[in-house]
Length: 177
Image 1 (cartoon, rainbow, N blue to C red):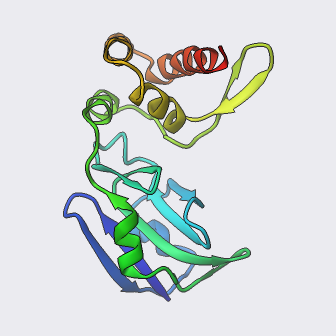
Image 2 (image 1 turned 45 degrees about the vertical axis):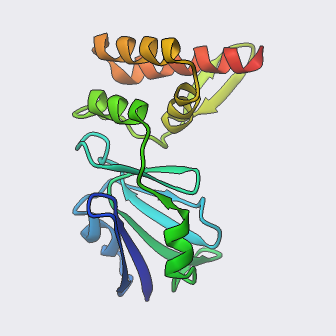
C-alpha cells in the first residue's frame, strides 16, 4: 500500500510501500498511543500521541498542527487504501517554520502527558468540547503580552492539563465577546 512518511526533524517526505496489518502503525511509531487525524481529505494522518511529551519537532500540514513524524495513508470509507495525494501536493501543504510561541510552549510541555487532540469540556453557559491544539492556536494569534501571560502561567504550573483547560476557558470567553 502506498503511504507517505513525513519527518519534520529531517524535513523529508518519503514514499513508502507498506503492508497494512493490525500492528503496522504501532510498529511505525514504536508506540501504542496513536492519534488519527482526518484533516487531509481522503486520507488518515497518523501521529504518535506521545510526541509532545517526548519533545518531538512540530510542523503544520495545511492548518493542522502535528508533532513528530506522521504516516499518511488513503482512506475510502472505513478502509485504508493507497495514499493518492501527490508528493508535490503534500510538500506544498507542509510548513516546517514554526512560530516561536509554539516552540516555547512545547518546551514547557515536554515530559507532560499532554495530547493535542484529546477533547475536554469547558463549562460556561453551556458545555463545549475543545482540544489543546485549539488553545495553542488561539493564543498563538494573541498579542505578545497575552502570549507571555500564557507561557508564564504554563511554566509555573504543576498540572499542565489543568492550566491549559483554564486557558481554554479564557480563550473561549474572549472569542465570545
